Image (cartoon, rainbow, N blue to C red):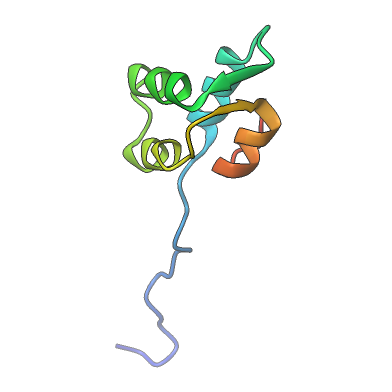
Length: 78
């Protein structure tokens, strides 16, 4: 191995959040607040990647506005 060759280092959390962004756009259309349980149920139905489902499952129970949930999940928001 050459000295100037380093293994590809990826940031620890490189999950693509576009599917999450799309889901939030869809479920918050015409809604102000949605419960964590409803967000999780819709994410499972939409077959979001496991890493995103884990983030949603880790949210405390309660209702969230789109900007709150986007901040907590690392999404760009709806």
